[in-house]
Length: 198
Image (cartoon, rainbow, N blue to C red; front, side, top):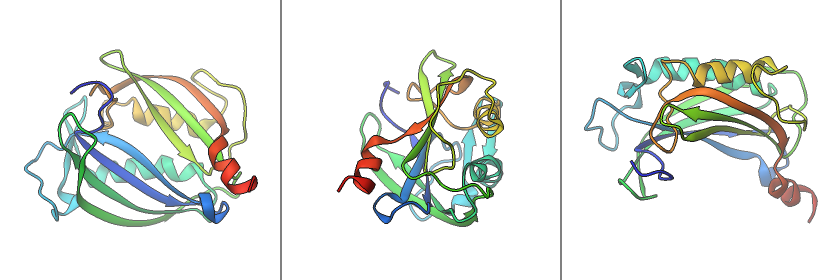
């Protein structure tokens, strides 16, 4: 697959934070490969099987593994609403909706959400490319970039999950993640302007 095209399949995790309404809807995207195709629109997402470095992992197992770390980034008032599976036309940005799974999982932290917060973890893929985990509306304050292991256990746990041999998430060069590079806690300036600089 050419570099910079998403897919070939994509999981989209929708979540709503307790930030101001103009910036409280977010989506985290994960490029994956479905191995038990054809997987037509309307197929039950729970039947999906994804490729990993170790072989394969079924969607229910990946959902559990991912939510176990993802929910740790958020205050208890944050709602991880649903996940959707989309399939891309090769070498394009055109995607077809396949299936959805309602989740309704809450965050776990008692710490207050910091509006317009954005935390990014960058990774190196097995083919030399890069990828990222990009999460918004968390309780993490702005700070300097950190190498791994960091002083923040939630970031360390996320990096460990993404670089495990059982992770289905791929970089844009279609390689699996093999190393975490940096953890960067910060602020999304565009979201901050929309919320506070009217």
